[in-house]
Each structure stands twice: as structure tokens, then as C-alpha cells.
Image (tube, rainbow, N blue to C red):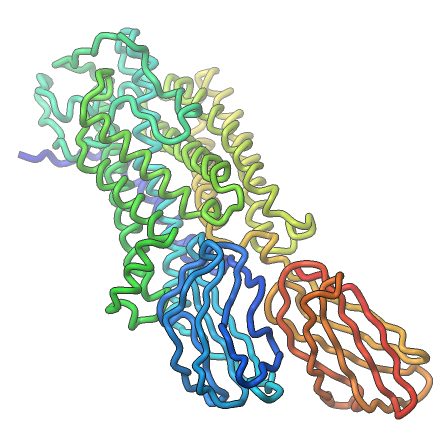
Length: 617
């Protein structure tokens, strides 16, 4: 017969569930920060170029990281929007380049290359480029309308990733903290204090009780009875190891009143651990199921090739790892925490926890890093430290009204210190390469999220110091603990958003304003954003003391060493209340140092040329 949770258990579980529910709402509101990551390095045929008839060749798009493309993800369209029949896209350059071939019987005209791919870190990237076949292209050709379904699924995926982070805290961090505290007290008399008492309470859920109270159901506490576990980053998780050779502790048949109260708390924390593991499993499965449509639209859900591409992509592998790990932790049913013996169930739980953390780390920016190994290790340690810090606070919150609160804080302190040190080191390793230049730290959404996270970390550490100082004086400020838990919960949310947001180096998009001297005239060059990709250059030619007449304006964009030249097709525009001396041209530029050269012809005998540095971020 299943026992019903008591009032204290429901109240404790309710407080913990309230934190998770509030973060769900915050996560939905904040998912707009994230966007695509992979950047186009080059397109062939290049934007605005004219391909000679009979020399059509291949269409290639080269990215700065490995990408995944569906069969419909690379298309060539005519000026009326009709799709040109091309072979299935192929990969080159270690999956950094996607390519297809133009048909031999393609008529002359303007054509648009359109692509939609999945970057290595799980974000979709779309774009287009125009070229001419046998004739100069019409660069005013309208771009394809983005698929609204893909945008909605991207937003949903980012929300699912945020929920995954919260699930890891409860599913992995909370059991690890309870295991650590139990191990530290394995050689001391069980006095029913601290988090260790919660472990004893968990044992009472599956052992015969002589107190007269009905036992709690095993499913309420299966995860927290995990035993001494370790996940990725063994050096960091060595805090959890138990003393070798110790005799397994024998569970008692009678618990003290303090242990009885902790049993109620243990049931609540055990339920939360199960909810966390279930959350990771559900969100990972959902991310996996959404991948085909994110690659190629709704029709890709019924295409086997799209499912193959989804399962073999980095994002798909990360989701599979998270799903497998969460399922193993739910099914392992490990033995009692105090038992230090290595059993198949304990080993299974450890493997499941490791896969869960590894999948969460792989779903972030580690997949796209140039130094993949170091970045993945750093991200794994970062996720583990975050889970331990958050899991410890959840355990302390669960017993914050009990007499064992001071002991719980003392047991949790070394975990918190180790977690903070690991977070600081790994956070620095991951953040420094992403902040280029430094101005991007406060001008991009990613940089602002990072600053907010750092500020909250400082607030949390200050709250923790005050809280532990008062606890040593037998003063227990419950509001301070709630505040610390709330701020740490927001830190977890910000960590998830940072994993899904465009790094500062990729989101940095400063404007360009330059003035070129053209004899007695000047050319004001303006570009709204200098991020890599599509750009529009606006040029205003003026003379301060007299009207000006311009016959033509031509331009060329090339690398500083005059390689990769791109001729610009300037067209004259006439804004309201202004003269006919405004010109605009569209271009596509990759990240790097370029030079923009302009030639202005005033009449048959007068022309000037000038150039300016053109830094693309």
C-alpha cells in the first residue's frame, strides 16, 4: 500500500517545485537571445559575380565550422523563385563545406543560392547569395522568406535546453551532494543531523520501520539512494569518493525522531531527483524529434535521409547521450547511499550520470570549438560544478526548518567552495575566447548575459558568506537561504541561455562610418553592421560649397593583399529632400581585414579613386 506524502513533505516539495516553475517562465521569456553560430567564409559563385556560360561548375558554401545539411537544405532558384534541379548536397573539407552541381542546360540569367544548415553547436543558419549566368546579376532580387516553423522550433529548442540544465541540477547534483555528505559521516555515529539524515530518511523508505509510520514508496526515493558516484571530470569529482576498504554500513531498523523528519525531507528530495532525471530525458527526446524539421522543414519529418542527418549531427549525438544517461539513472535503482560496495546498479547510475553531464556539455559551444578536447572537458566540469552547487542548495533548502540545518551547511561548504573554484576556472576558459573584441562584452546580448551572470555570482557568494557566518552563531536567516537559492537558480538559467546565445565574437556588429577625399569632394561611407554575412554599403558623395554632378560610382572589395576581389554594383538612390548623389550596393563578406575601393567619375575628364580599411567581424 502506497503511503501519502505528509504535510511537511508536500510543503518542501512545493517550495522546490516553485523555483523550477518560476525558472520555466523566465526561460520562455528569455529565449529570444539565442541565434545561429556558424559563419559563412566563402560562397562560389561569389555574390554579384557573373559566370561565363559553359563554365558553370559547382556551387559551394564554406563555413567556419562543421555543419549538417538536409537534402533540401541547399537550393538554387531562378529569379521567379522556381527551384533548379540539382544533385543531393555533398560534404567537403571535414564537413565545413557543402556543395552541389549546376545542371549543364541551365539558361542564362540571374540565380539565387539559398541554404539552411545546422551548425555544430545545434543552431540553424540560413542565407542566400546572388550570381549571374552569362549576364550581370540583378542584386535586388528578393531573398527567400524564412520558414516560420523553423524559427518556432529553434525557440522551442532553446527553451528545452534551459530546462535540461535545471533537470541536471536535480537529477545529478542533488544525489551527488547527498552521497558526499553521507560518505563524510560514514565513520561517525549517525546522529540524524544534516544532509546525512536525509539519506537515512531515504533508507527508511525501503526498509522495515518500527516507528508505526507507513513506509514511503520506493519510487519516491530511488534516485537519491544512488551511492557514491562520479561523473565526468574525475579530478573535480574526486570529492565524492569514499574511503576504500570501509565496511558497508548496516541500515538501522529504527530511526530517531530527527531521522523521521529527515525521512519526509528525503522523500521530497528523492521525488525532485526523479523529476529532474525525467525532465532531462523528456527534453532530450524532444530536441531529437525536432531536429529533422529544423533541418529541412515539416516535410523532413517523413524523410529518412533527414532523420539520418539529424541523428548523426553533433546536436543529435548530444541529445542521444542526454536521453540515454537520464534513462539509465531512472532505471538503475542503485543501493542505499551508505553502502560503499561497488554494485552493478551503482556502476550503472554512475555511467548514466556521466552521460547526462556529457550530453549537456556537448549541446553547448564545445561542439564548435577549434580546440574541441579542451573545451569539452572544460564544459563538462562547468556543468558538473553547476549541478553540485545547485544540488547542494536544494538539499539545504529541503531541511532548512529542521534542527540539523547548521550541520547541513557545514557539510555543504566544501562542496560549494570546490564548485565555485571549478566554475571560475572553467568559466574563464570558455568566456575569454568568445569575447573579441572587448567592446563586445557590453554591446552584445551574450556579453550582457555574461555580465549579469557574474554579478549574480558575486551576490550569491556574498549571501552564502553571511548565511554561513550566522549559522555558526546558531542564527538561521531563512530568507537569506531562499535568496541564495533564487539567485543560484537564475545563474543556472543564465548558463543555459549563454550556451544557446550567439557568442560575443559572432554577434559583434558595429557600424562603419568613413569619409574619403575625392579632390574637392568627399564620399561618406556608411554600413549599418559590419558582422560577417550580407551587408549594404551606402555612399553619399558631396561638395560643401557647391552642387555636384556624378556620372558614375564603381567599387571593389578585396582582401588587404588584393585577393578575393568582389566588384560592387552601386545603384543610385534618391532619398526624399536630397539630391541624386546617394548610392548603395549589396555585398557578402567573410570575417577578416578587407579594403573597400571607390572610383567616382564626375565628367569625361575628371575621376577620383580612394579606399578605406574594411574590417568585417
